[in-house]
Image (cartoon, rainbow, N blue to C red; front, side):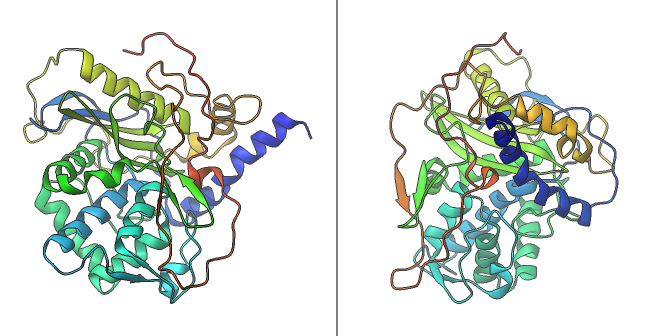
Length: 373
């Protein structure tokens, strides 16, 4: 087998599990033809650009943004603190990857747990946090949905804290923008969590999945997500000259595409004048896809999807970003501790998979492409 074939096999392997999970939980749904997106000014709430913003979408790991918001509310109320030990239960430890592979009974602080949720998007940690805050996962999910309703996420519903696929789990680009803006406005003191460049467990360094951190001017968050049914999604934030923008990009066909589209959208927002006076609250529902959740499985977890992803990697398997606004990192990433409370046995060492760490090591110098707007 050639080196290129090996790289392609490695690139496709992480998707096989997601494909199996999606097939097990989701019924057939219409294929999404568009890639929903929205761009918002955090301070004013003004919508700078949008397309298919009300199309129902599987949130994948973007769900963890609501998990984090709900947890921040619990911290603010005094129910829990960032020093509170989070205990791994059997249910939490049994979650599928991406995960930390901590054992039942092992503990980490909430502070470490939040960093892991953002940097690695670990499904086991999401459940452990939900149980610590809500008592049970089910009770926590009820709180999540209550928070979503309070925030005005009118077309969203969640069934778990980590975004693994299932019926009844859906959102829209518009609702995710509402959530992201609320995180920045309601908890500015915690904004630093979203810009962490990487974490260390003491034995393993894990870089942030979000390619824009350290590579796009002003990037300071927020979260990525993937399952077969949703494609590759990203909520991003960036701040320049005191102005913060949020972009939501859903349903792209690769890790590289979601980074490229996010960077291009944010750059446009910082450099061109807005043409609409709509805000998140005034934007009216429109377009198709409001009655049934779109399903990207046929495009993403298929031979066609594999070919597309292979074209976003170079000859040694590194991800190729094309946006001229994503540059090579000019410094080594800073890794902050996010692991078990000292004194416990570390989990077994695992070989990192592309979908668990973002597959972003050694991002090459971007090749400029024609303007995408």
